[in-house]
Amino acid sequence: MTKDNQTWGRHILTDAASPESPWNPLMRPATDSLVQFGLPISPVNRAVAANMSVLKSEPWVRGAAIRGGVEYMQARAEQTFPGATKSLVSFIWVIPPYTSQRLAVNISN
Image 1 (spheres, rainbow, N blue to C red):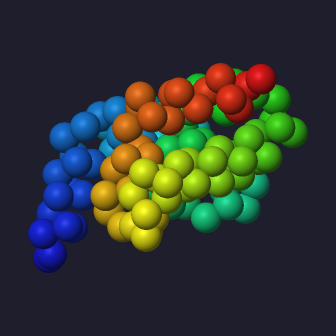
Image 2: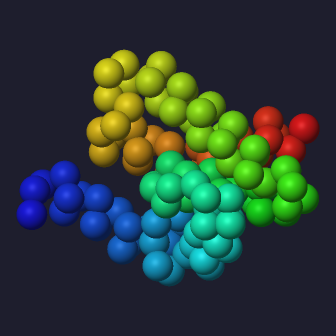
């Protein structure tokens, strides 16, 4: 196991706020939303789908909100960490609740 994988595993298992954590109560509804709209299950997609504004939105809006939120978060990660969008660093930047919750106002309005 690589050092990055160990760091990622520690983050998932110790931070219940992470959408990837099995301790997070939003993991199942977020995953259900991704499956319902045929979106890939990835850390970024699940983080955006676990956003309360997305989960509370009308079902017909939810798919577009997830896709738009993911594009926005990936663009922000690319802007913050140029060339590292697919790396563990950018995923961890996108996933914390304070980052994805700031997205809430943009998605719901």
